[in-house]
Image (cartoon, rainbow, N blue to C red):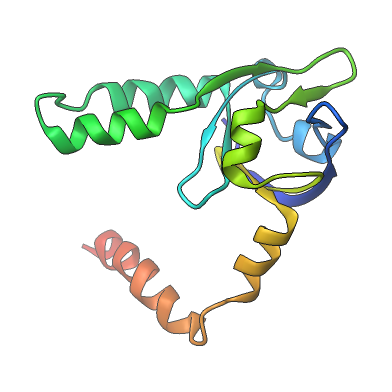
Length: 154
């Protein structure tokens, strides 16, 4: 799986469909260009996974010890609303109404691709989130990424 990157502005039609942008589609492996799974994101957004990535994540989540209450709660919330999607003949994906409502999505969305996932945000919510960049991004980078660099040095 290639690492996905980019931000893409899209408009939904009256049925809740959007065209998968060509710039994003070409980053996907051929087997991942038509089948996806979508679920609720962590911050009132949606997360779209290529099917092969969803299979990996599902195996990981399903390996949790379900005798642990916190694990059961996480599994329930993680899988809540999960829906398989396929592109239609016009390369569109239809977003489920319940998930559109959850994320407050109406007509305009931003697809934010990173790693092996694509977050789908209501355009106004995405712009608001991104406009609240931390005052000291350098300190945040040091705190988050410094741990990775320290581990790789040892």
